[in-house]
Image 1: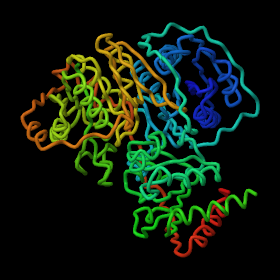
Image 2: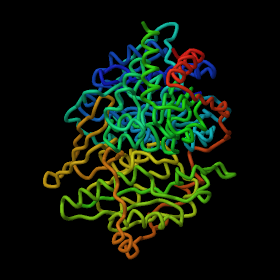
Image 3: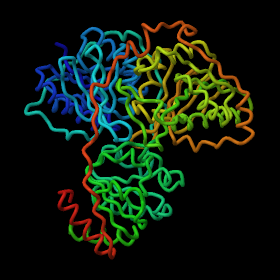
Image 4: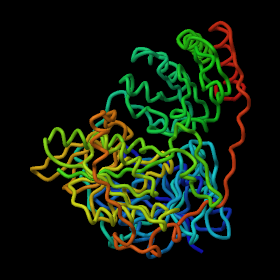
Amino acid sequence: MGALWVVAEPSPDGGLARISAEAATLVRGLGERTGREVLGLVVAADPAAAATELATYLPIVRTVTDPAAADHAWSAVAAGHVAALADGERPDAIFVGAGADGRDLAGALSALTGLGVLVNAVAVDWTDDGPSVEMNVFGGKLITTSGFTDGRGIVTVRPNVTTAAAAATAGRIEALDPPAPTAPLPAVRVIDRISEAGTQAPIEEARIIVAGGRGVGGPDGFGIVEQLAAALGGAVGATRAAVDSGWIPYSQQIGQTGKIVKPELYLALGISGAIQHKVGMRTSGAIVAVNRDADAPIAEFADLFVVGDLFEVGNALLERLRARSG
Amino acid sequence: MRIVVLVKPVPDPASAGERLGPDGRLDRAAVPAVVNGNDEYVLEAALKLIEAAGEGEITLLSMAPTNAPETLRKALAMGATRGVHVTDAALAGSCTVSTARVLAAALGQLEFDMVFAGIDSSDGVGGVVPAGVAALLGLPYLSYAARIEPDMDARTVRVRRISATGYDLLEAPLPVVIGGTQALGEPRYPSLKGIMAARNKEIVTRDLGDLGLEGSSVGGAVATTRVLDSRQPPARAATEIVRGSPAEGADRIVDFLVERRIV
């Protein structure tokens, strides 16, 4: 019986990405249910911080120290090490997050090992034939359960499908002498890491999203969206129309060519709910919409639809939220 | 400057009619195909680079069913030079491993400085194939591109990769594979002249034999994943519609958030 691996992705500050803590929590539960060993794997120039954090979630965390990860794109560095280890130890499944780094790693790792990839898992279970992975497809219109034809493979896990929860006791950390990567991938140098003012936490990870569409009317109109997001402790999202108009950066776009999100609350202001946007947010926990147009498509799938001016309703809501928080 | 752009025909997301066939595979005949949204952004970036350089060519590469040329024509009408269409009955039901292998084999027969791919496709949304293609070819992979700046004299390229806090500036020697996003900029509409010109542009067809591959190594018969089951998501409760003053609307939203234990 093979083990279950969770490959930790780096956070911008050198710690553990939140998606990796969530994946670790999900996979620990799967290991307990199926009697499989769960191993965390950290590949970094200085793995200490991420490994310590990952060990709060998993019984065993192994580290590979590779100085190249300091100033090179992480996925190509990590994929060589993980592939070499996986070829030797044959885990039953390797889990990563379904964000940028996790997808890059999964693609490279799949090519190096020949293992298949099941993407965007929202739940994972086990059958006689290995892992079974649930995912939302066609923009949330259908839920599929898929497996690997030879019982083993790589799984990318959606953000926000579980809440990261520490184990009862912290795990142990083992430093590995890395086996030479079977096929080292060409390194991609990171010349610089630029922080842009106003950049927020990744919207895929937000518990609450307040989003604006064409109806906000301009960059100034996003003021109320931002204020409501701040009052609710959430992130700001947007439709493609708002992004294309230059009102807000692409990083905040939700929908077909933007991010796919699943917050507990999605508050949509001046968003009509066209299919290209709907596919990015329809699986949200609760959907509340404010729109002047009572016939907007979002009226068909919101839980609560307030017909009205988004600025008037938004400001009234802001007053109430601020009054509540005292 | 020679750029290959990977183009995937996908079911039109605006049709909202996507469905699985009885074999658990996407029913590609059920809805009209369009060029994958993210592929249009990287094609636009390629066109702008060629225009700025004043020379160069763009080859579209597509692994797709036999009807793909209709979709490829639209991308050719935007200004690409030619198309290569990889099609073979054995490829129906291919998984991402096969897709990456086939695309890598086809790229092995082409000359290029850069390969551009949309960062993911609107039907599969896995976002793993471009990285796989790069790994199989042993080429650097620069992903989540918001800007692409090649230096043909130095034979290098710099890419702004979108990060959690802004962007990382990446650099690698050519040739490379680049995965691009909508942040590259709005794609152009084909002009009438472009549409007319596209009719006469070459689309070369390649089957597995042409690529030196066998149906026993790639394709649906050796897929690494399969759909076991599918079901409709639970229906959402009917929408509660509130009409009234802004104060009444705001009151109801607060009550709703309290009922749901969100605040």
